Length: 71
Image 1 (cartoon, rainbow, N blue to C red):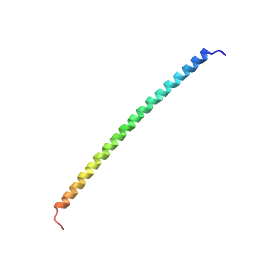
Image 2: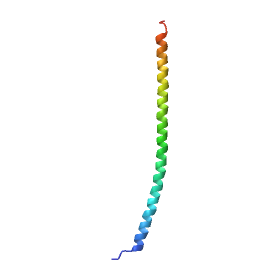
Image 3: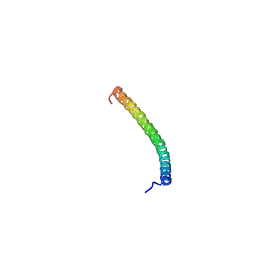
Image 4: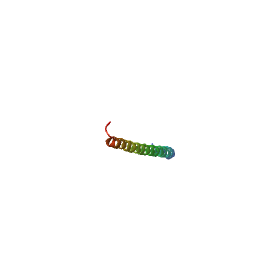
């Protein structure tokens, strides 16, 4: 049985085309992932900032209560 070179080349070209499509999808997904990571970082920073503000407010309330005369 002879090897059909033409068919092998067609199959190789089809595989190359499929690989290019996969690479495009991969780049798109990597872009989306990067965007999601940036959102995650922003959310964590906002949480940290809010926690700091809460802590400052609580400390201010505690300091005010400590210096007020008992009523």
